Image 1 (cartoon, rainbow over the protein chains, first blue to last red):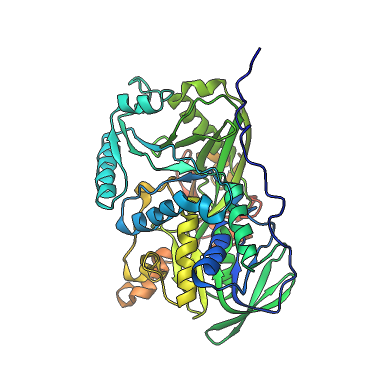
Image 2: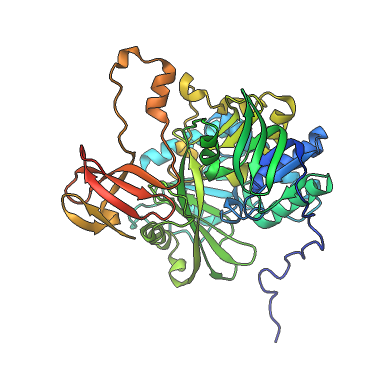
Length: 411
Length: 88
């Protein structure tokens, strides 16, 4: 009797050696606070694109153990506004060559994303977004319910459910990647270039001289710095509070969940903002699902059960076969959300302190793109053109980038 | 899910409530004199405290009234709930 190769059997082996575990030096040209995807990518591109290698990445826990380990790994660039499309499409193009750049497998799988529409307003917004994407050179199509079912046959397109599928946008180049491998690939390359990745090193304060940050206080001693880049996601405002800098960030728990391993049933990514489901099937076979953000502020890396319950109800109605799947586990990350659902990147009142925050639920897909642009920003001391629209001062000027409609999660 | 003590109705399940963000944000006393910067601070900037945080909740699935609460954003536990105008 022969068996098909089980799902996940082709996952690559890990490298024998990933990175050193150095003691912190007394000073660095650049200190990056936060050893998640964004911090590691920034370190990589500082070394690769700008030759800046006297860099430390400080991580209070273990590398990529925060949101990077807790997300649903969706990658797409089908955002509405030019500013968002530019940075996310820049990221997507980098994703498409990242395995070669890092010399490390990241299992980037371009299986496409369907964003479902359930109401007339959804349809209008979606068609508008498709046209906006095309104008920005981003692959996008509008599909009818029958065309949706051809791409993902398990989607329930009958019209007797509470919120029938009225069509979908489709971005064929969207995909998923293996988040841990992505982080390790960036970490390994940055380490090879001479960047010090320092784990178990919490930033507890800053040393300042006028409008300059001269050092960071950490649980492993004081470290001097030429430039500081904050890449600490949900904890950014905790750090900014130490400097007396305010940013319009609110930290919320965002939950996700995963099923047992199943045979391949789900060939693409399906998202629905209206009933709030987003699902893909991981390489090994788990159904990976994202729930909503809990409404309240929180730092607890968990959320309320009723958010999961509501998400499961919607998922089972949209994918009737899911009723037979077992939920394996749920978890939460802490997302930092802004009033316009767009990030806050760039200068702060301290001339050598740059902030990278407010990615809400969209941070993972941006990883190489923001790493590239933040490295450029730090190296040149001025915002890269793709991050310039996301400056903190837009909340005073009123030039918001209102991306609620294309964000994965209503927040 | 946890029970939240509505100051008017008593303990009810979390799903009956709606979150309203930071409490005790006063409307500017002289709005016509505010600069763009000051308006931005009033409209967009809120504390993002890690720890005990005073915030507004509405018992939207019950009496529909707003009240204030002090809640720990690390554990999510409510330390107190109190009526608008009262002290925690």
